[in-house]
Length: 186
Ligand SMILES: Nc1nc2c(ncn2[C@@H]2O[C@H](COP(=O)(O)OP(=O)(O)OP(=O)(O)O)[C@@H](O)[C@H]2O)c(=O)[nH]1
Ligand SMILES: [Zn+2]
Image 1 (cartoon, rainbow, N blue to C red):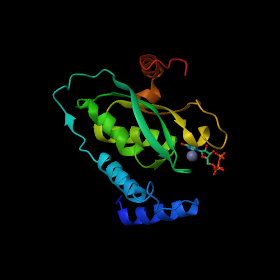
Image 2: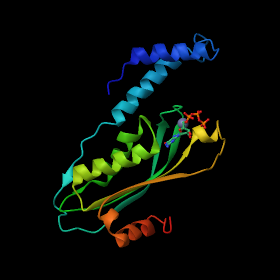
Image 3: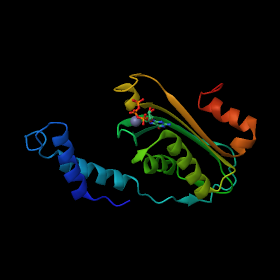
């Protein structure tokens, strides 16, 4: 996805006019450029190299990174939805650096999204990169499009999950994951 800063700037200027603002007033005159730079920054944050380590090949227990804070934008209103991602996988001969799990979250969240797709994309990407025995992803989020407008339900939490491999097939593995992230009985 290439970022076209000029298009973003034109669109934001037009948008500001559309909501009855003067895009040339002091506080707003740099806003189109700021927003274009912000998307350029999102674009940079999405890029990374997924590196594998084989030297921990004998570790075949569950790896969990929980409470990964994330921010995304709902594709319907372009308002933020944000919360926590919990990721687990059971390696099969290779592991990745823990930060790569967080970078995976950023890679898929910094774009117009829906929570379900974000959850699945993280799980599928990790399954593909690590080829592990299984992957589990749970996301808990508040959607500002439901909090500050529309149904106006601040504080709600939407929970989504994507299970792959052994997490799907084996109830005990799934329960261990839920217990370790503190979501047993979910
Ligand atoms: N499934 C899903 N829905 C989402 C997500 N983010 C926002 N939505 C919903 O997307 C829907 C868009 O519905 P529309 O009826 O087209 O839009 P709207 O008229 O602005 O909807 P209201 O929010 O009910 O006023 C809303 O129900 C939102 O709550 C998401 O991540 N997943
Ligand atoms: Zn929305």
